[in-house]
Image (cartoon, rainbow, N blue to C red; front, side):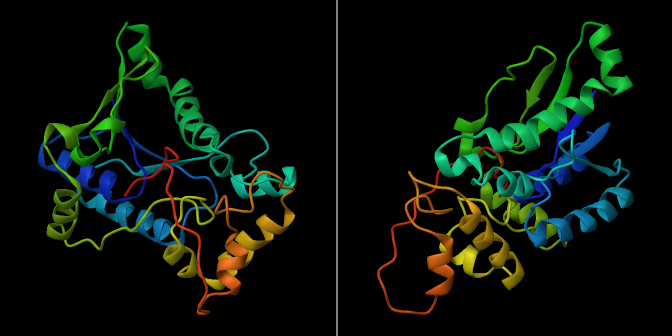
Length: 245
């Protein structure tokens, strides 16, 4: 059984195009929604739903964390904290991306048939040839991670070329709008309402070891001083596990 872990970004979009060209039709395409994806990601999802229909692919299934249906943003506000990656942890991607994927599989009859027959579910992941270090074996014996972009030797530029040849607009970065790994320019490009929500999250958080979503600097300071000539802290990115282009 072929399952695509679709992140909604450049790599996973290029992977779908390549799979179509190789006649690798997936049995399901899953997108784990944190409830706080960037606006362009939701727009791209709608675009790719139409693409899947035109190309004989299954509809992209939107999955979410089960329980109280709380989004990552709502959880942070309730707990008066920030996303775990701001503190150096990757549990937000585990809880809102990986766990919903595995929950869906555990409840899927076709996946159960595969496991009952002693086989594994193939999980297709969009990691390109420029980030080989991210390609790892599945920690679960129920899955086999597949990295077709590595097989095709497609790097970032190859993924972009494939999307352009398909006459699709580039999807943009796939991440939460309040992700601590956002670059200053990306923060300032956010719509005002999303900037306000990010600043509200910072203001609500009870912090002592970090200053805000930027870890050693706050998004609130950046947004409110935008355009002023002042020294700004050096930006440092720490991968969170859910980045897709």
